[in-house]
Image 1 (cartoon, rainbow, N blue to C red):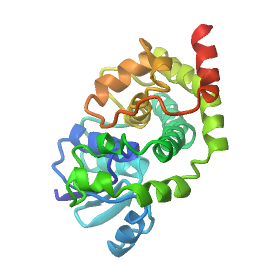
Image 2 (spheres, rainbow, N blue to C red):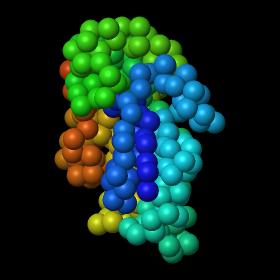
Image 3 (cartoon, rainbow, N blue to C red):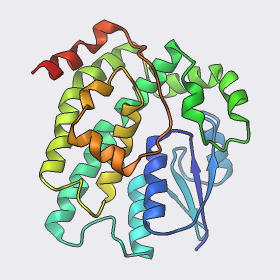
Length: 250
């Protein structure tokens, strides 16, 4: 089986695809793309869309963690990414959908907004990347990429303030899914990888890290994604973090 995975450095959906391929024991070649420019590369590579992760698997072009997971289960049934039991599968797919549609955009917007305020952490997010540029050079020339990334992902101040206000409920929901056994079990499923990678990206930010301290959501991310890159010091305005402080006080 020949696999080529197109990703963006520190992209949480890309990490989810990497983990699923590794879970299946499928060797793959990784190609890291630059934010914004990745759209042109994917079009040139004849993908139908412009998002990562994008996988060429035995000549087939597949995009998105959900589609990739189902194709991997079709080709390599064991270990499964989706439960065979219909009721369990429904619960996992509901959690996967929430992780994709609700949780996933939150850390993405936060990181781009944060990097616009302080560019210095960019090097930590590029560690281990394979863009073709040395990490120091990529970090030193990242200003236009950061500006474009923030624009493409609508990472404006109002959106990030709303994300921070919604984050305590999101973390509660992750903990609930773990308590119910939907995610966090011995055999990780597609929802585990979807949610744990988003959580791992959130944990790279000192501003929001205390909200997760000692909670099941943190343990899940640390266990499934121990090598996630990135380390950002406190950067976001103090007033924006009040919903997080209030949640920790209750």
